[in-house]
Structure formats: C-alpha cells, structure tokens
Image 1 (cartoon, rainbow, N blue to C red):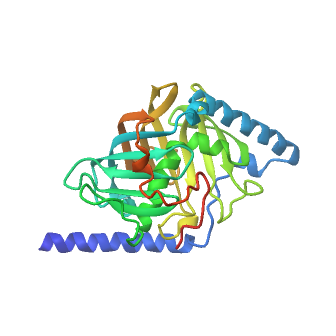
Image 2 (cartoon, one colour; image 1 turned 120 degrees about the vertical axis):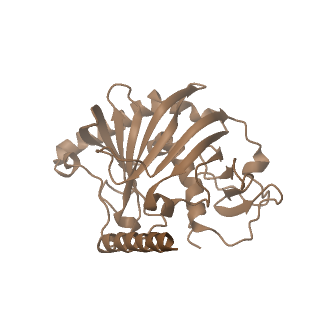
Image 3 (cartoon, rainbow, N blue to C red; image 1 turned 60 degrees about the vertical axis):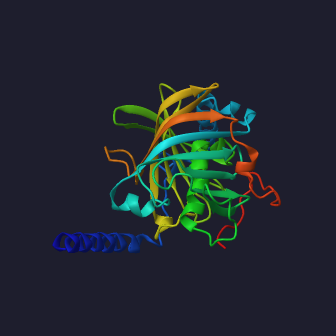
Length: 307
C-alpha cells in the first residue's frame, strides 16, 4: 500500500508539472522555421522556394515514392511500444508492447488498425470517409458508438506518416531551410506547410524535413500537430526518425519509426517506437477498408472531424 501511494503521488506530481509547463505555452503557436528562412531577403526567398521543391522532389524519387500510387493499398504489422509518462498519455490503444496490423488505402484517409497479439487480438479501430468505427473478431464494424477522439486521430496519423513524402509533395509551400548536422550526419532541410507562406498558423501544420545528404532520403521530420488531442497542442511539436529502409517493389519502406517530443538534435529515448516486421502492397480486401458500402467515398479530402 505504501509503494502504491508513493507511485500515485509521483504520477500526480508529474501530471501537475506537465500541466504547469504547458499552460503558459498554450496560447503560443510553435514555429519550426529556421534562421535561414526568417532572415532571407525577397531575392533569397525566391531561390529557397526553388531549392525546397528540388530537394523534396529528389528525396521523394530517391525513396521510390513516385511509384506509390501505382498500388491501391498496403498492410503492415509491427511491434509498437510507448515509453515514459508522456508516451503513455499519448498511447491511444489501451495496449502496449504488442503487435498491431495497419491496413490503408493509398492517397486517402481510409484505414484500420487491428491488435494482432495479446489478449485483445482481433480488436480493431478504423475510419471510413472520416466516420469512426470499432469492432472485434465476434462483432462487425460498429459506426454507431461514441467516437474515441484519440483513436480517430491516431488511425489517419499513422497512415499520413507512412506516406509522408508523397503527402508533402502535394503541399503548396516548400522552402529550403538550410543545412544541419545531427549526431554526426549532415542534412539538408526543407520546411513544408499549407496556406500562403511558411509562417506558422493555427490552421496549418509545419513540417521541417531533414534529408540525408548522402542517401537523399528523408530520415527525420519535426512537425506541429494542431489537430491533435493533447492540451496545449498549438505550442507542441514532435519529431520522427525513419530508419531500416527496405526495398519493397521499388519503394524504400522505413521499417523503424521512432518518435519524440521536441527536436531530435540530442540523443533522446523515443516515447514511441514502431518496428515493422512485415509489409505488403495490394493485399487488403476492400471490404475491410470499406465495411459500410453506403458511405460516399471522400478520398484524399479532409473534412471537419470535431463533431
């Protein structure tokens, strides 16, 4: 009982400290632009826009993502781990350190995540035309239950980050952001966003993309997450590191994803790791991705999901 109370007090202290840190930041919108962008003259900015597109396009092709839309869907299974208090707060699934299977239709936001191991194996969570559903081995997809906002955010987020180079190529704002060295590796940086320019807004996320100078691959991305579910979301940003690239039908798939809060310039233990152990294109049955035949397909369009 004494140990339990000690753990309870420690948890309460961490939550209070986190809230106190995040409260003064809650009104401030994070800005991922570098000095290279913010200090540029109008002439330099024109050059940076051209270079930003060129570097991002080269990375997109180097990974083979120009071939992605020749496929219809994909499925991958991997061991997912959430660490630390913040990681456990962010975990949307109710389970940890288990295998999950992800199934997605390319260039849409339609997908499903299924627990693939442990006592909850067979339970799934999905989105179809932005309509949330759940189910398990014994019951079909249920669209009538109350939407779980964390899972409804997480399902398309994993989808988005798996296809990230392809998604970012569709963004209107791409600006060269300079170069940097992280843990001994040199990177070219490009900031990507939507709207009229690269300045931060509460409407559009920013992505600071780190492209390996040697391989031309996108290995690190820092990002804001204005549509997230954590408090103070407009002032928060995270980073993801891609590694263990595997050639699957001409496309280099990163088999390891590691995420942290904040920037990735220092050695930090990830709060989230996804180690993929299998990946296949065009395996998913359409009935899995589209369990409700009466819903109109919305494809790659984003709609208001706050309801």
